[in-house]
Image 1 (tube, rainbow, N blue to C red):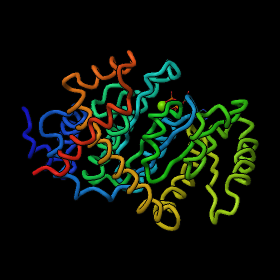
Image 2: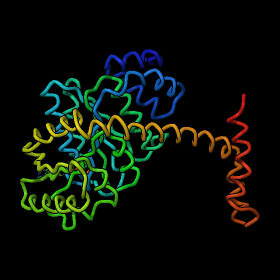
Image 3: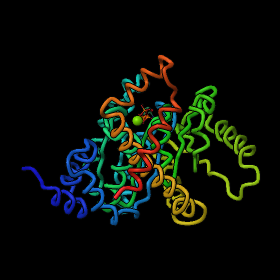
Image 4: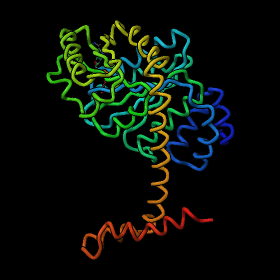
Length: 319
Ligand SMILES: Nc1nc2c(ncn2[C@@H]2O[C@H](COP(=O)(O)OP(=O)(O)OP(=O)(O)O)[C@@H](O)[C@H]2O)c(=O)[nH]1
Ligand SMILES: [Mg+2]
């Protein structure tokens, strides 16, 4: 039976999984009422710790996510997982195993797992993941884990909005650190050297420390580097302790409360405004027509924008 918007929102606020699923789908599809629902949920959000987990394909992000979920629920904490499906050719066969493992943890009470396709969310991947995180937060999850492969700019944008960002590295990747998309090392709040059961983990730790020696020059606190074996579970407890402590006090909390959330909210509002403006001027083909004229050198992009600005101002000053 179909749920009304009110039922979906009420249910979500009570942590009802069926209501959460429906609401997430509604918001992802930008179906009628999505914005209303987000408005109603907003005041209940802001309590969950949002942790981004990223790294190269096959680094063990999903295995680690599952291990963290088990550990969190063993402590009586509830958790939401957003698995951003790498619809890239990188992950290939790993996906099935991923799915099976995910299915296992998804039956744990208090655990809610949602996967998102890299392409498909109407509001864009980044906005989509943020919406889902906010819904899970409002639904009362203590922690929200977002897993993405650190290969695309979109994916990096997604994890950047997390309170705490884990970058997962593995031994034996050759130039493992360099292989990651530029920009990803910079957003890490902590580094996880996974597959530590294999040789070479200490070398990776040393590499990261070496990199931090250069990059963290003068900073008060440096990013922790933690060794784990996601399959055996070794180091996972220690990792979780570090994550919880990071969110609880010190620099993490401060940055979480200030710059990241502010940045996230600013870009949310900017992109909403931008979307409306582009729809308004692009919707009737005006921008597309302008592009043609620009290509033919009948006009230029700057003049087109200048011509639009008075309309913008009128709209802003409007009734
Ligand atoms: N030896 C060892 N293998 C691991 C460890 N963690 C994960 N693996 C294995 O590495 C492979 C990839 O693990 P996933 O967890 O799917 O890796 P992922 O980073 O989520 O992969 P994508 O999402 O496809 O990028 C699987 O075969 C895991 O069993 C570990 O700590 N040690
Ligand atoms: Mg994975």
